[in-house]
Amino acid sequence: MAKFSDELLDHHKEFIAHQKMFFVATSPLSADARINLSPKGLDSFRVLSPNKVCYMDITGSGNETSAHLLENGRITIMFCAFDGPPNILRIYGTGYTVLPSHADWPEVSGTFGELPGVRQIIVVDVAQVQTSCGYTVPLYEYAGERDHMWKWVEKKGADGLETYRKDNNLASIDGLPTALSHAQNE
Image (cartoon, rainbow, N blue to C red; front, side, top):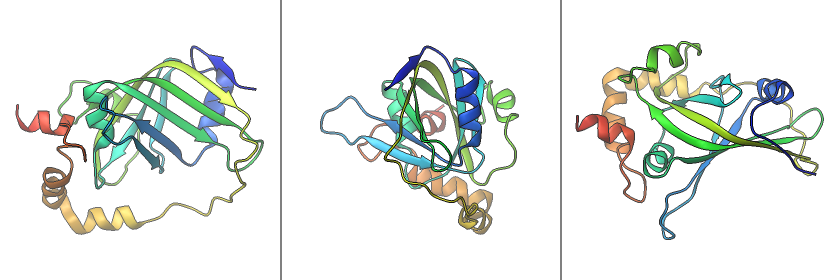
């Protein structure tokens, strides 16, 4: 049976803190455009308050989340229990992108340790939290983090990362601009 809350409660925060990965879903408004669903890992998620969360967004092949948030703000974040008691937790809300040049960057980025290839932080204002059973989610054992991103970032270097982002992260696959593209035009 699904349970709803208007904010993250203490037991929600404890569950989130135990998870090693989460999923982010966003969608553009156009019925012809693609819905985005991305897995996220590393120690990249933070609960800032009962109604605000964020995650450090690592450079990737696309930047759909930023584009969709810029267009309409809608976002869902999902955590699944892959060990321990079954549980699924969804955070529904509206979000926005914080770039290193944004006034909020020092405060929000200060809640994280060092992560490879950081391009932005996604901040979410929590509208509703839902938990459900998760009975069919399989059990998995956590074996550790991959080191591929660290190696890729080291090989690219700062200039290579900037070039990569300019080449791959200024628009969504459906052509919507991202916060990075807006920053480039300022």
